[in-house]
Amino acid sequence: MQIMNPATGELIRTIETDDGVSVRDKFAVAREAQPAWAARSLSERVAMIKKFSDLLKRDVEIVARDMSLEMGKPLQQARNEVNGSLNKIRFFAEEIEKTLAPEKVRQDGNTEEILAFDPLGVVLNISAWNYPILVGFNVFLPALLCGNTVVYKPSEFSTLTGLHLTRLLHEAGVPQNAFVSVVGEGDIGAQLLQLPFDCVGFTGSYATGKKISETLAGRMTRLIMELGGKDPLYVTEECGDLEAVADAVAEGVLYNNGQSCCAVERVYVHEKIHDAFVEQLKAKMQAWKMGDPLDAATLCGAITRGNHLSFLKAQVDDAIAKGAQLVLGGKPQEGKGNFFPPTLLLNASHSMDLMREETFGPLIGVMKVKNDTQAIELMNDSDYGLTSSVYCRNLERGKKLLAEVNTGTGYLNCCDRVSAWLPWSGRGHSGVGSTLSKLGIFAFCHAKALHIRS
Image (cartoon, rainbow, N blue to C red; front, side, top):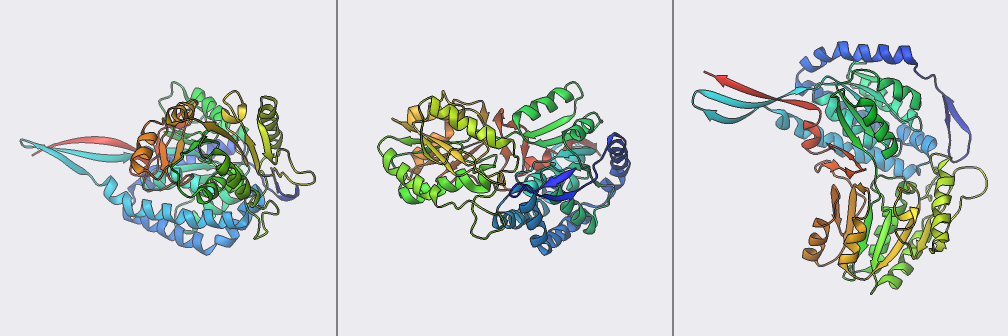
């Protein structure tokens, strides 16, 4: 498999992929190793993950540079991902023991009723490329800590990063047969799904998630999927400092080249402030310099997948044909590399693909609304339900608005953030199940009810 640099079109490295035989062998290794891994004390597993954190911090520059090279993420944003991932490790290391501790629920006469937890067995993690560390950690860290072994397939667009994570976990003491990497493209993922895993954790597109669900139908395999979104943001007339809000919205749209599951993908602005806000948003988006991901001044790097450029252009063309006004950007940059500039369209409507289908790129449509009722109706007019944002200095009004939006996460006066202490879950086409928080620990365990009579 050729690892290509999306910013230059140049070959970075050629890597030998797995095949049908090695995929089956690696699953068998992980299955055989699982009882011994589960038999290790939880404190021992936690110590390994803490050491892994130290090693990741040691190698931050190596990991971040390879991530930037293979997926086009600006280098500083790659560093941010590595450093930000340390908080997830801290959360799991601090919370796992008290979360999984057996709990005496009640005493019924001479019978104790206890809630305990067992590992699932062998977990398959088909991970995403856009945040290869942060997204992978949602699955394989709690899975390992709970006593499961893991077969980990990094995306073909972030394989180098995935192999760094594998190397560092093994260096930290996690046995090679407890965390097993598989390298390849979609055909390898399809072969993995034919094997009898106890749980599948996947992050990616709705279309692929639907195929995975159909493949596993009837097998009673636990399935945890985060499938992206079409995340709405509403700027009320009580939003406060327009420039500051526009700055936050621009970052929510453009960070990681717009290739974030919780990126802002559609914006609704109250008519009383619409024109003033749009001027601020245009200025803020223009300030996001596009260029070489390794250049410290670059804020927008390359689009990871070359074939996605035509998809982004098609969304722009469809919007313009249906009445949108193009204000910034609008087409791929000529020359080498997969570059698409920050793109802003006004007069958007829900007849446009731009406002209905996931974009996953540095472009945004803005729509003027008359009131809260119209805004909520439009925000909920979607098959997706990952995150939603409201900017409103009247906190009671803002909380009420968020309560009416059908998404797994709500942001008030902020957007595009994730906390390991809160669950990460989607509704509708945005996924099944939860990761992160205590719920994301329980996701990788079987609950066991114990009735202990003296």
